[in-house]
Image (tube, rainbow, N blue to C red):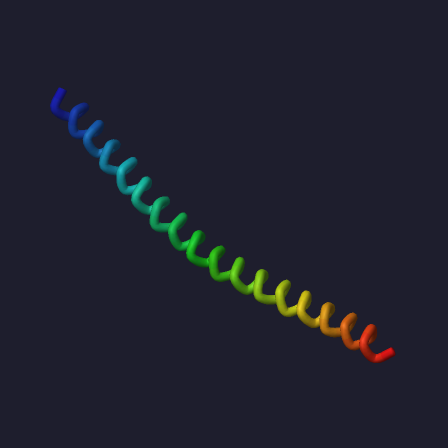
Length: 62
């Protein structure tokens, strides 16, 4: 019985460690994604400003 209890305790510990590692990985992915999201939004805003500027220049130039 003791051996089975030790195996079950070891299994619980392994599952807990796996959960902790997965949590750390997901946090790292979330940090990276937020950084990429900011870059994408920045590029889109820059493109929008350039397009609006080009349209305004074409309209006001005539």
